[in-house]
Amino acid sequence: MQSEWSLFSRDIEESVLPTCRELGIGIVPYSPLGRGMLTGAVPQNLDADDYRRTLPRFTGENLDANLALVDEIRTVAARYEATPGQVALAWVLAQGNDVAPIPGTKRRKYLEENVAALEVLLSEDDLAALSKLTPVGPRYPDMTWVDRSTAPLG
Figure 1 (cartoon, rainbow, N blue to C red):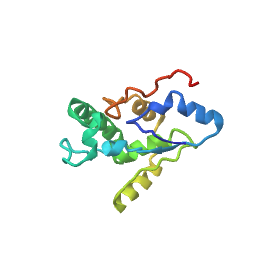
Figure 2: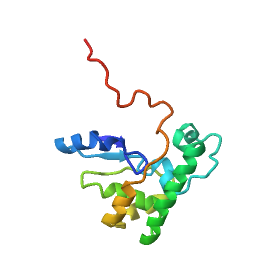
Figure 3: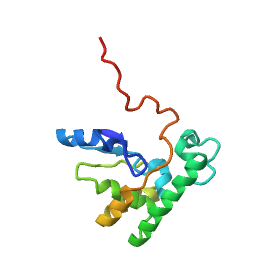
């Protein structure tokens, strides 16, 4: 089952992930680097044509708070001589053998960096600390109807 899942998007953990595991369905997380946020390479001022400017987590005070979250990931990364992105991927990979993240990249050097995340084996303490990080702001501009129940049809 393909869904967004990362340290920056944890929505599936409450019900979707347990259901998939109960049914033996593998998880293919897209955007495991939080649309680039978790790499530590997101600038304070995004280009005018950058679509992330429309995402609440990348604007205003939310952006400031989320950049501080990345600083915490950077601290963990330093202990492993890794990048924040590698630690973010290592966290996703550590969630189970039924997880196969698909990070996107435009450059070979980032592909190589992503593959090197396989060598980052996070301690239980670091996994727990990373799991406590909470991104600030909704994923998308209008999340009003997400996780809402509707009356049965018919």
